[in-house]
Amino acid sequence: MGDTKQNAPTRPEPGGRAPERRRQRRWVPAVAGWLSFLIGLHDVVGALLPEWHRRMVRLDEYVPGSVNNAARTATLVAGLLLLLLSHGLRRRKRRAWRAVVGLLAFTIVSHVVKDFALSAIVAAALLGALIYFRREFYATGDPRTRWRALWVGSFLAAASVGVGLLFIAVNRHGLVRDYSLSEQLWHVVTGLFGASGPVTFVSDRRNDLFSLILGTLGLFTAGTTAFLFLRPAEPAPSMSAEDEERIRDLLARQGTRDSLGYFSLRRDKSVIWSPTGKACVTYRVVSGVMLAGGDPIGDPEAWPGAIEAFLEEAARHAWAPAVMGCSELAAEVWCRDTGLSALELGDEAIVDVAEFSLEGRTMRNVRQMVNRVARQGYTAEVRREKDYAPEELTALWAQADAWRGTDTERGFSMALGRVGEPGDEECVVATAKNDGELHAILHFVPWGADGLSLDLMRRDRSAQPGLNDFLIVEALKAAPDLGVKRISLNFAVFRAALARGERIGAGPVLKAWRGLLIFLSRWFQIESLYKFNAKFQPEWQPRFFVYPSLNDAPRIALAALEAEAFIVWPRLRIPGLKRP
Image (tube, rainbow, N blue to C red):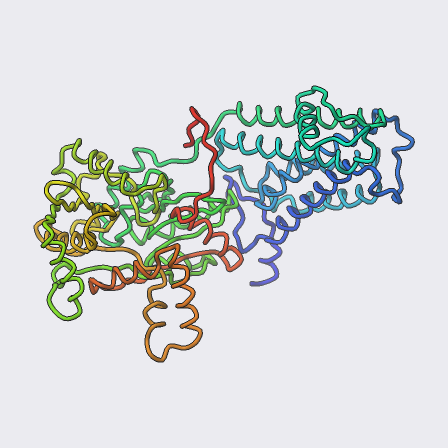
């Protein structure tokens, strides 16, 4: 890359287009965010420790006490805001940049009036750098909901209580007497609401300062929370009915290319289209990562247009673009002229219906398991959803949810997350019953006109082992009557490493990598899924993970685990408040 291209300006292009990733200075928002965090932390601590920089040149001795107290309190609030905004600054958010510029200007004046010159110089240096690199902060705000008001309000309330307790701790020698922790906590909480508590300082000036700090923090917390809650909420982007209809049309014409195509119809995904409308990419934003799953939908010749639109949208919001589980062809298109990289993530197990047989030594374990289940009196039924009455499907789904045993539905790239809804009539349901009682369910989604892709497997944990094997074999037997020629089973992560690492002659590095995967299998079912798939002697099709750089890979991997629900963060549930 030549010098001219490296030094090119990074102003967003007309129409809101963000600069190309290769023309961005990635260190600028990172450094600016951390400096903003450090300055905010310095302001908070400095406001609580008025004698911290005793040796610095101070002007507060020439300023009336009430003005000095107000300036110190304002500096404390500004410091908390800088702490809160530093993350947005690291993500190139334009609104965060504007707010930080304003806060730094205020901080400079506050330090000159109240505090010390060195802090003002540092803040002025960062302010100048932010103005000079202003074109690096172009990202628009993320789609917001009123839940943000709850998270910000909780953070500010906790921070305000912490600030109050810290103020008492660092000024404990100036207290009238020793106060218990409960008394201190009660004083801080009541002070945030403008009331007085039991804690009293010897110095009236210290009492006035503490009351002013608590009252200001309480007002600031309440005002910020109310503003975020009352402002118009913008729901997260969703797929419209028109988008879904267009995607179904593309799947009808091009759906045979990718077994994961039907999963693009998940209701928690959004869609972005190529300029011609002949291709699209579906995605979900998780923790600042714009995560796509599978191949683009539609004509491969139109994929580059959809990919370019996807990357432009990611750059406009400063999201990290990534793709989970795309094919080799799609990985090549994604990486061509985009600066993205691809990593082989694992293999998809695909069974050819015509070639599948239970005969032979290699299928002995499966054959024995299936025969054992059949001898126990289990029977299978394989039908498309259109052959079920709506109430039957509702009952099946309710039973499947009961077997799941958790509120968390796993899956993103290879899960549909629903059964029995309009438009899904071609999906296939396989059930196993014993004496008329349901014990296992398999759900498949269409893969073009002559294929199926496994969506979910649920079974009664107390039932006969091997029911999933039994139902897969029965689905393969029934496939010809359904017009199905191939069935895609589960996705085996890092399948090649597991297979090669157990062979004679495998090197120490490969054996160590396999050992790590087996260890992680305790939580992520890596080895068990591979072995389950391998029993059916499938054809293995590689799947790839596409990402911008190694620096982004850990954050994207974490977001992918969150999207697949392998990582579930605790959430506060409030009755009557629904999260979109």
